Image (cartoon, rainbow over all chains, first blue to last red; front, side, top):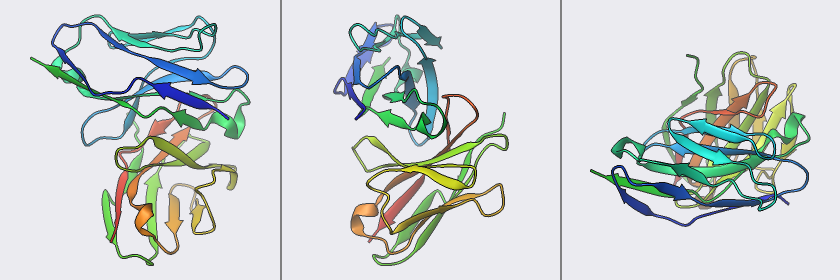
Length: 115
Length: 112
């Protein structure tokens, strides 16, 4: 079945540092890939997505590129802010459409950014 | 901007009791989901719902669980006889005709 392996946290950075959170996946076919973010006390918010190989998703300074050859979707940001402190989840959904939009999540990575 | 809402935000119940968790998805969404997150663990898929019926369910979603969309707006998850291991955060999500899903803020269920 589908699975997502995500870099173990927690990750602690200083403001303006470079961020990478690694994510690799196992899936049949051509899944869509996502990063979700969960701020303290809140639900999951879609941060960015990519639906086919070599697509780059980007939002709020975060980027991730769908690499089929390495089955990876690493999250990067060039300069993190204190407000980026949250839990980040890598996820994938199947390629069959309809009910197979269900998401398979990684374990999540807690990011703390210090001023 | 429309958003998914869930009630209650926190539910405490005794083992063996029935609970109903409620969700109001975004009105034009077609696909509905429940996920759960046990403290410190990953978010897990429970069930998907489309066209007024279950389209897929996970191994977790046994006979103690059921879902309904009784009035075209609310989407509920019922647990008939709660167990200690049902304690978790439960998230409702919805989506249109695309891969994006929009999540509610979650209901924290505590079974004592």
